[in-house]
Length: 135
Image 1 (cartoon, rainbow, N blue to C red):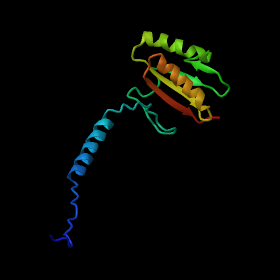
Image 2: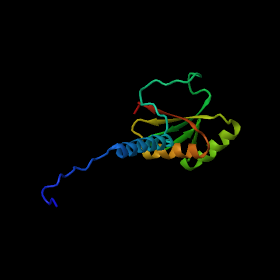
Image 3: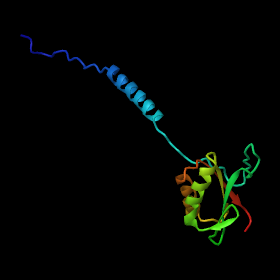
């Protein structure tokens, strides 16, 4: 019996299974990333020129926000609570209604977002935001 030194074998480390797992994770994240549905408003930065084929606001409904808190719907002064109802009425007449919200440059963002939310809840998806530079 030879109880002397025995030759020790170093264990072999196979990375083939590790490579398979990495590729499976890569495929998983590629597929999971393609199912994300990110929805955002397309907004142009103030001061950039964006004009439609119509060339202006002639075929759009214009809602103006003023510094003193007043809101004009077309040429009529309305309460902020009436915006959604009026947009729904206008959308009933024109299914492809475009709305332009004109706000002063110092306008509170929350009020602008509230108006845009009311317009979206009324069913209008074509919303543009314009910024006045006048004080």
